[in-house]
Image 1 (cartoon, rainbow, N blue to C red):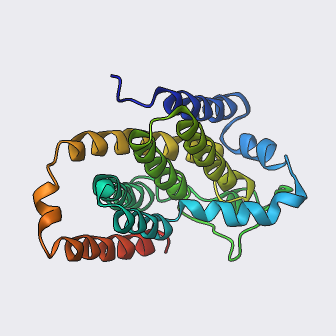
Image 2 (image 1 turned 90 degrees about the horizontal axis):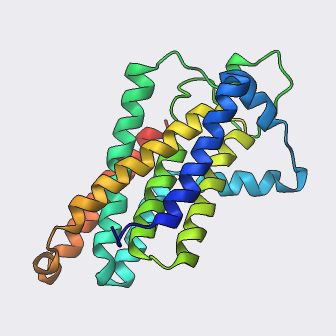
Length: 229
């Protein structure tokens, strides 16, 4: 129990709870209208930049940098990469098979005064938010690795901000973001638990260990690109 980043989970679960409450109180569509209407024009460009932190491609590159800089963090890098792969598959199953007709705000709220900052404007496959599940997964893994309260709070705030930008830029409904974030927390916690038990010391000593990581990274990047199609 002492290895669980409680502060991180408290902050992120409160964030998900807030979005679920907003959805139940205002409704699935109306909650987006209310939250999307809260604007800070000076932050529009920042939000477009910040929202890309949830892109699986960039998270994979980040994981590769972490592994190359310090081999002690190979498990962290591997966990992030595995999370990107598994969550990408989960998201595509949900979007393409389970909820193919759950469309984006731009399509469902065409007659409403809403703010869409993305170009091109997405119209389909809204549930759940892929960026939210990816960034929350990566932040969870990092919180398990760097357990100081300052790091936990930083990762939690950053992950919640990135997830919230999906509403701000007009990409997803609050329930999409909350569900994606919650799936990210659960999935990454399970992956962290299993990978933590793997002994990577022998693998790291092999001359081909770096090529294994690079190969997994290439697969992950391909899946990340597929997720964003």
